[in-house]
Image 1 (cartoon, rainbow, N blue to C red):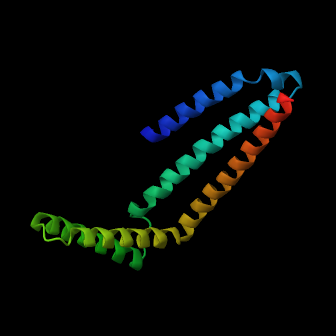
Image 2 (image 1 turned 120 degrees about the vertical axis):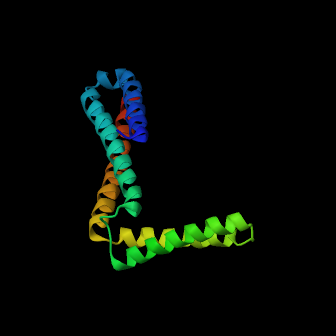
Length: 149
């Protein structure tokens, strides 16, 4: 399992344990089960969104995602990396200009890849998960505020 993903899962488990410890007031009015279910759902959504974002970040280097335009941008980036290394070795002052050009090309490559239908689906799933995560967080706050009254 990816190290960052493991950290997210571990942090989510600790957060859930801490949140579950604060269920006492909510249990008095019978909202504990709903709050617990929402807390579990929030952790699941957080992990799913983080994993989806990690996968999306990896799309730029995914060779299965290709088109003539994408391949041209990848070749251009490779050439720019080689030129940047040569410029840095010569210390001719062009390195910063080349770094900025690479950043622009990388951004263009990412936008081009994100326009592919398969990647758009991933982006939609991530955005849906984020919206659901926000709604779940709002509902948790409502239950906790109601329990505090």
